[in-house]
Image (cartoon, rainbow, N blue to C red):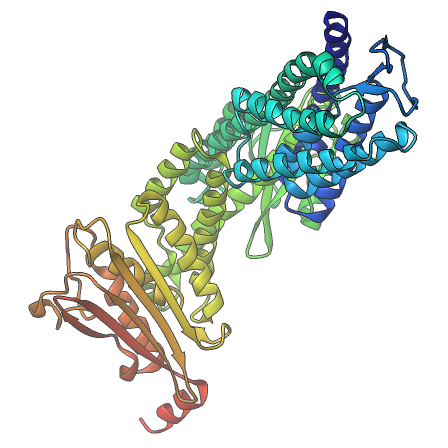
Length: 585
C-alpha cells in the first residue's frame, strides 16, 4: 500500500504541474469566465478530457495477483488487471470548473478510454465516470452561479465523495472486488481528494489575483479620470494640458506624456521635453498622421515616431486622437524610452484613457456651446452633470472594487452610458424612447447599487421604442420620485412608468406610492423653482419649459397627488397632430 501511495503521489504531482501551467495561460482564464458559451464548453471538454486520458495512461497497473507494475505509458492491459490512476480527479475538477455538461462529457470520454485501455473489460467505468462528472458538475454549477469556486477544504470533501462513488462501483462490479478496494482505497481516496483540493486552489488563487489586479487598475483609472476632469472639461489650453499631462504621467507607467491640439504642442512632460516644447508646431510624423486620419497609431521604434530631433530619447509611442463630435481636437501621446516596455496592456490603457478624455473634452465643449445657443436656459439641464451624483457613483464603484470587481466594471460602463446620453442631449431636442430608457436604466443601476432593495421601478411600455421624446423626460420624473416621494422609508418604495401611444398622442405617466405632495405646492411645480432639502428644484421647471416650448401648453406636466402617492403625466403629440395644432393657433 505504501508503494502504491508513493507511485500515486507522483501521478497526482504530474496533474498539479499541468494545472500550474494551464492557469498561467491567459486564454484558459478567459475561457473559464466564458463558460456559458458552447464554444468555451467544447474547449474545456477537450482540455480536461486530455487530462483524464493522461491520468489513464500514467496509471499504475495492478495485476490479478495484486502486484504493482509501474510503466511510463500504460496503453493497454489484460482484462484481468486493474489500474490505480487520477482519472476521477480530472473528471471532478472538470465538473467544478465547467459545470454538469462539461463534467458529464469528460466523464464519458474518460470512461470509454478506460474501457478501451482494458481491452473492452470493466464497462462499469463508463457509468461511474459519467456519474462522477455529472455530480461534480451539479455541485460546481451552484458555485458558478455565485461567480466563485469551492474552498480548498470543500474541494477536498468533494474529491473524497467522488472517489467514494468510484470505489463503490469497483467494489460491486469489479472481479477482484473487495481485495482490489482494500489495496487501493486509502492511497486513491487521500491523494485524489488532496489533488482535487490543490488543483482547485491553484485555479482560485490565480483568478483572485487577476481580479484584484483588475480592481486596482480600474480604481487607478477612475482616480485618474477624476483628477483630470477639471482640466479637460475646461478645454484644450496650454495650462490645462500641462496639468493633465503631469497627472497622467504620475498615474501610469509611461515615461513621457504629450498633448497637442490640431496643430501645436500644448504640453510635454518627461524625456524629450527639451525639444517637444509647448506653442511649437507638432513635429513628429506619427502625430501628424493621427491628426490627419483620426486613427490611433502605435510606434515601436524611433524611426516610426519620426521625430526630426537627432537626440530624441523617445523609442516607442501610442498616439491617440482626441475626438469631439466627430472632429479631431488634438492628440494624446504616450511614450516609452525603451520599446520593450510597450505591451498590449499599455495600448489598451491608452485607448481607454483617450476615450475618457475625449468625453471630458466633449463635456467642456457642450457646456461652452450651451452658453452660446439661443435656448441655453432649456439646454442647461441637458448639459449639466450633477456633481453629487457623479461623486456618489465614483465612491460606490470604488467601494465595490474590494468586494465585486465585475459589478464595479459593469457600473463603470453604466456611468459612461449615463454621461454619454447627457452629452447627446445637449445636441438633440428629441431622442428615441429606446435611448431614454437606456439613460434611465444607467441611472437606476447606479442608484440601486447605493440603496439595494430600496426602490422597485416597473416599466410598462405600450409603444414603439423609436418614438421621439425630449431627452431626460422620464429620467427627470423617475429621479424626482426617488429623491422626494418616499422620505426616509427604506422598503416598499415603488415607481411605475407607463408609455402609451395612439395615433394622436404619446402619454407618459410616472406614478409612485410615496407620501404625496403638499397641495399648496402643486401650483408652483413645473412653473417655478421649488427648493427642498434634496435639491435645487429646477429640474421639473426646466422639463416643463422644454415641453411647452416644443409642443405647446397641452404638453405641460400634470400632477395628481394624495397620501397614497403622486402621478405625473404628460402628452406628446404625434408629428401630424403637432402640425395640426400649430396651424390652428
